Length: 151
Image 1 (tube, rainbow, N blue to C red):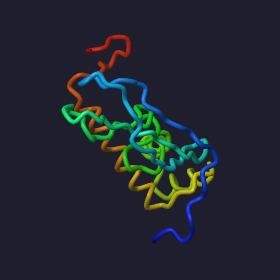
Image 2: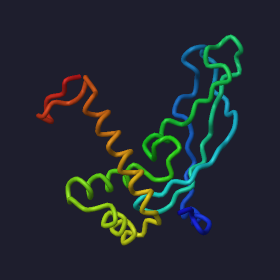
Image 3: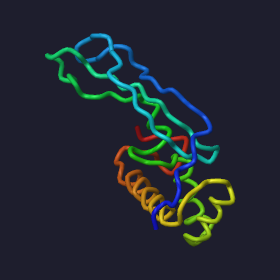
Image 4: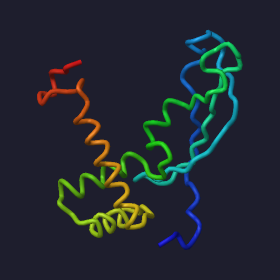
């Protein structure tokens, strides 16, 4: 079922900028091409992220007119996602560690104040499974002993 009302507004606003100041390919300074916004819901609340996207203006550069988004955006959420990585991790933990059903996971999130639909919980569980599969398929990763890294 579709959402019946508007999504709640963000409680906190965060501006994200690129950490790099110059392009590695041509050496020119990175100029802000445009700003975009996205709203992310985490366990701590709803955040409005304001992203300063940069593009190279040098026509001979390999990054010419290709957007470069802030690096920090990746620690908030997956691309095109509405919910933060902490919500995805909690969904996976409740499902596979606490052995809860989807309706129970949904209710646990609602009890924590996360406005979420039950179908979205299923979707987030699929994203969690994809992330675990990617981690397990990574040939260069960590061994079972956390002190010894393979890298």
